[in-house]
Amino acid sequence: MHVVVNAATSADGKLSSRRREQIAISGEEDFARVDRLRADSDAVVVGVGTVLADDPSLTVTDEELCERRLERGDPKQPARVVVDSKARTPTDAAIVDDAASTYVCLSEAAPVDHRMDLADHAELVTAGEDRVDLLRAFAALEAAGLERIMVEGGGELIFSLFEVGLVDELRVFVGPTVIGGRDAPTLADGDGFVSEFPTLTLESLERIGDGALLTWRAGG
Image (cartoon, rainbow, N blue to C red; front, side, top):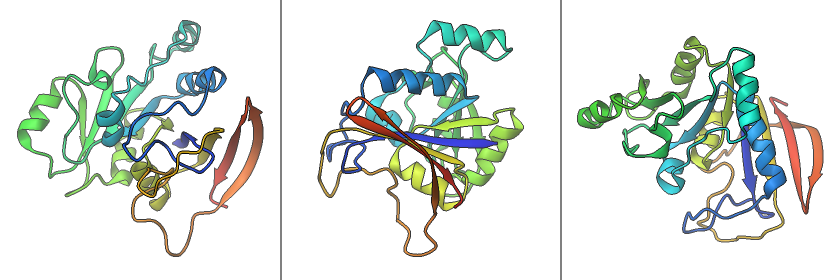
């Protein structure tokens, strides 16, 4: 399995405002890059917080890219994955529509009635007691044939993936906007590291408009 974390941050490292409202950080050129990255992936992963805040569909929008997927024997759309310990994903969310297959990773603490509701819309993966055990959940995704994984956020999930050593690449578009706010989400939230900080090796730096795309390899 190869896991790529992709994100867009403001110049001061924020994903959105303190109100958790989606802010346009990048432009059309970067949107097209993200679409290509989705098209090259077997699955696109987000945390439930992103689902509740933004209601993303996580689908490839360029029909030519979809056709290329079909030509190489892949489904038209990559699978979508929600990491959702307590099964809070709404059954009317865009991510569980019939545009693509969806997996919801749950913990054993997820309420049974919520599980039953989601089971009609997605494949459920149970891993962990109180919160999703990411190592076990991603192993189950790999066993299902999902090898090329793209993670789109949010900050809590990204931190947790670094914490358990699942990140292979980090690609960040840094846009020319300052958001500020001590409570605004950052690229990697969660508890934060106090020692044994993950290290990255810079692979490339590309200017896109007034922003920059940085690509790092994880693991030093």
